Length: 121
Picture (cartoon, rainbow, N blue to C red):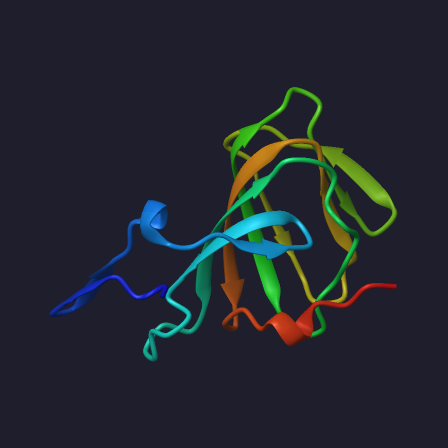
């Protein structure tokens, strides 16, 4: 369940309390999926090894790198870029992408994450 403590005007989620879900990138903990008045979802994803190359037809993902191995990279279509904690990458629909190396990322997804919008070549 991704819904946290609901208060007047805000919600609080502790990612440590959310179940980890397997995904092409590793293990994701997803918040606000059931929050009707929030248009997206927020994920903390742990990537233990190279992720599967995939893309989304509708989703825009923004990766904020919390922790990374020294040689961590992102593949974005045919290009690979080095990433480090504190960097952020916005990935538009249709862009093939994957994480390379061990890392922990905060991912903001708009519109709300939809598992049926994960595509593999």
